[in-house]
Image (cartoon, rainbow, N blue to C red; front, side, top):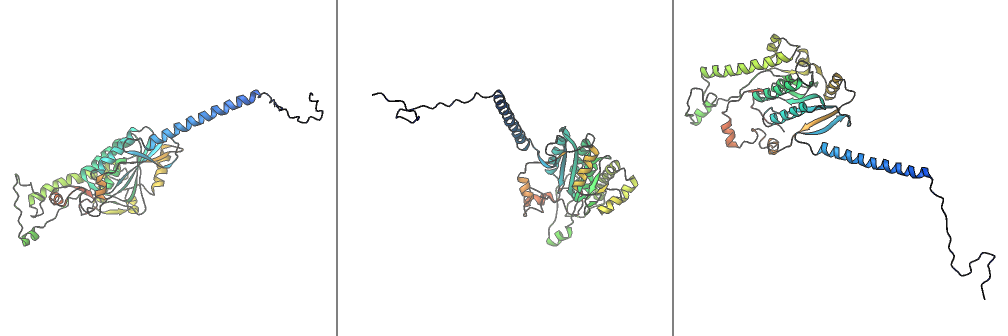
Length: 348
């Protein structure tokens, strides 16, 4: 017998299929999806590009490496802080010179702030840095920020800013100490009491002129006075050429080896302003007419020399020298633009 129709619409045991028909997508929805996908793709590409740029900036740099310090992180215009800390001597001289050269070659670098915290160092090294800074200051403005101390060779390299650069010093800065020193010790009397005699084999009268085992002769004094005076006159000339605030006679009167406070240095025309790093950077940016700038620093890869310099055991010795080498080195004549009677001491 055939099943009869079910007027109430109730299930009769046979499977039924329900078909739901959705309306066709509107044209504007399809285009919106495509636009959103395109924007998403562009965003991904932009982030990949930015990530690559930052990787290159922070990791894939050739020494000296560059690091962000302050200011705008997106500005293309850069101000660089170059630092000279501790005794002016190898290998720190070479490191600073490389940084100076990098600042000169980078077209994005618009100005330089030389930060000095040094009591000076070797005559030759001080002049090498000065000469390189002068070359830099002819192309880009160089300002100076003196920290705890910028004396003798520290003041000498500050002259690299030239007549157009400004020199800032912190309120507690010590500077000046204009002069030259060749450290020497006379232990001849002590050696005599101990029964020690020095009898070097030499080819000329002055070959052991600075030996600590005999007093200086009159001829030796004249020899070294001539060397000292030439280095001293060069120091005075460097200041005279780069400080419009001082006359030649004023420079000579200040060149007694005296250390000046920031206040006295400003009154005597040795510096321009008393202020901190932030103020020096602001003045440099203003002179350049930059609305914003990215302030960066350079740093060189540390090596064994830095570990030796920072060691307590060798803090009072020239970096890298064994005790027996120090004994031999003690008789090697060296002239210093140094704010101390003691030989140059490396600082970490």
